[in-house]
Image (tube, rainbow, N blue to C red; front, top):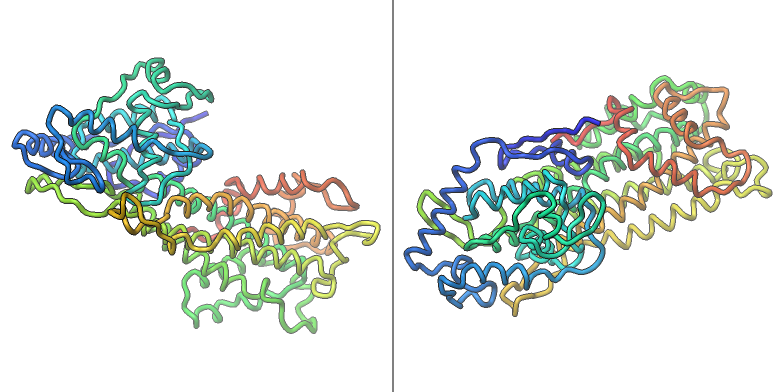
Length: 512
């Protein structure tokens, strides 16, 4: 297997780079030349120490203890204690692909030269990726300001040889993993613990994961909705370009073009051009409007997350041109929190509309198909309870999509009195995406079953290809059978990149 190589300049990660880090193990490194800015930044920190200047984060306590000045001989212990005291995470461990994104974006952020760390800190992060050493990071414990302190503390502890890591599929002590790969534990210098712990890399990585899963859902649901349209003998008239041009919503225009492309040439569509049906239900007719709005959100929030992945989000920041170290609030993850909330809405809406199309297909009075999409209904229940599953998942996503960013709880004795809640707001996206993947899988199965009843008429060439992909994995539903494995098989298809690869020419990208 060919391992992809990513070499990036700090501040220039692309969505493609981030998607690769999420989807596959790859070789990751920084382009030559980043050390110069980092060395200047570290020299500024050392100059402050040498001149006995008191600067927050370098020789003071943290948070509410910022007024406490720390003696020079205690600065290394200050940073070590910071990491140890902040390693308070709980809950399930983050998956390795999320950890890979966290480490890569943290390395890129520090390498921009505004954080006051030595090059060895960044080299240590890159070494973890090189040797595929993944710190075990508990998922819970961050409120999204002052950065993702707790999860990043667990990452940093692993650099120091403390805590546990995953190596070659085995969880073992960090010190043991470092030794087995020839790496030395990192000893932190002034400000370095704080630079590693401050930052939005965890919430951003989780939100990016939600973005990438939502992209797959958009592709699968667009194809499923098109197949449902043909199965129900719906009309493509609502996809006419003129309708969408006069509204002017760009995502809607692009999605209408996608539906026209996918359905073009369908014999089923041609067979009922002169039927008496006046209008289709909204779940068919308004697909460009709903999915187009979702596409706009993916594009807008993808752009926000790309900027955040390339950002410097620790505190304080070092500006070497003036030797200033300025305390601010870039660690506040509000941009990520709002993006995650919007992505939650997208994922919920994609699933909600797909569930409505399943309900439409099994209702013979609307779809004109046999009740519950099965021959001999009564003896057979067909898709009756598959729809119940879709409804349950759609409802669960509605509960999960309540905005996280509107909540805040003061921490650090009210010093940090407004927080973003970005981390758990982003973490829920993967759960929601998994729910929606199952809903869309059920729709694909239902729509394919509907197409069975339209034979010998054929759908469009694109939809016939989709139908065959489904039938390669799951046979037609002739009578009731143990159905869960069928749903799981198509859910795996939805969650893979296979549909995007096969039908890339028909689905608009988020274009970042």
